[in-house]
Image 1 (cartoon, rainbow, N blue to C red):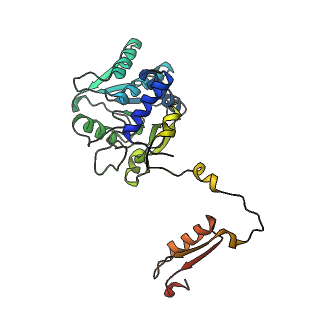
Image 2 (spheres, rainbow, N blue to C red):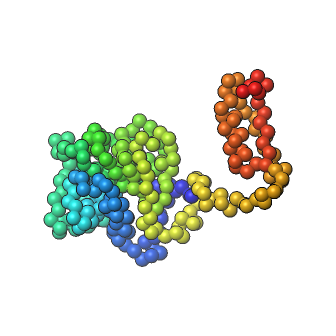
Length: 287
């Protein structure tokens, strides 16, 4: 599977809108629908739900999820990070749709307006999502720290707020999610060990982005999956001779540290080598 950059992910959205004649707000509706369907299947969907939104398109996803949950009979608590400026067009349109339903929305502009979050609550992080290029600070950092301190079930939409798409979080402030609902494909950030405490269990939701873009996207980053190697796996004659399938030589091991050499030898045999020879220091040969 290819791993795309933040720019390429944005281009994929644009490519889909161009080639499928779908508007950006309808594509947002499609993404939010995938998230809402997942949420409604979870055992915690009857708990209090707190949705925290920024004013970008990730926040627009959050507002759309809020509306869809309400239409399904669940009334979430909705909080918007307030910077004194209007949001993106899609955010503003979804905010208008919420107002038409009479859903209450609360704005957070200072620490005094941070809500108390009960322990059994489910928090949905729709603050920033993908595309972050600098550490969180100010209002966003304050909200994220407040959510993390609540120690509830937190679900991040696309990417946990504060996490970069293509590198580790370092010592930055980042949402600690139990689940991350990401769109269409894996991101590089979910394959970095230092990020693991923050994204939890990753669920890839198909939102119908155009396959043509992904097929033609140019990237040198890939994640090897089963389907990538199945074409190289052949069925062997049960009476075939081991000499027909290669001879692998491993040079491994050191004094009192033979575990890796033993594991690598077993892996070489299981991967298909007909014969495996492991060269180890003489002092370890009897281990």
